[in-house]
Length: 360
Image (tube, rainbow, N blue to C red; front, side):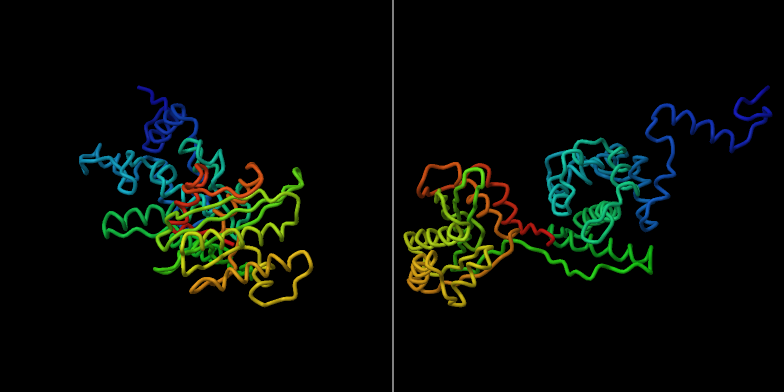
């Protein structure tokens, strides 16, 4: 009797293993080698985790049901789909929020099947830098912490807010980077999380913004008012016409304050991402001839409230107003009041209500 798995025809455990592996590789060319997993630049526990995912050994609910360890395959986060590995790590709405905040929300990111997706975004060929951290390391850290956060939900009934989990992901990736390369220097730039912050109870927040279109040689403005729960109160867009971006910013603030007064609001926080505009008003700087009249009107309007605070925010915290300001270009000249949000704005509003943050 001759054993075909070895050169001399004798049977060994090693030759039998090599033969079975060769048959598996023919059945699935994508798993021709697992060496890329063990070469990943990350913590050892994450390599083992990736190995479990690739081999279908990660005990998500869909796999637990097949092993009679659970009665339901449903995802515990969304309760909408079966909790497969790809759903847990990428396709669940919670995971999609995390990937978007980390800067991975590209078209190819959400369309690749599991094995190709893992290999494509975790191997060193993807080692571009994001916020001073290799993107592959950030990707691997996110996978691991999405799994850990899911387990915390199952066993401790605790789920992190998206910005909390993203902060942990960046922290772990940074510490891993230092551990893997102790002589490397962490970039000195300080990053911060930016989000829309709701006002206190009894207050309303007005966010406004201006927009200039070089193609149209015209400006527009827009804004919205929300309560302390982040719920929509009212909004507006205005096609200003041919003017500067500074005038458009001030125009949006003025029309927003007018709208607040017409609604009978008494305590208002006005917020905009134009630092120049905020300083012109709060620091009583000397205006030029073009801005003097509108600045005077804004200050007069602010004095008509029981309390009115004007403050600056970064662009990421003013996304809803930016959307409305851009929308103003496509409306007819003059002011348009929105009693309910335009359809394209819902995603931004929901993100603001959930406290979605962006790294700046």
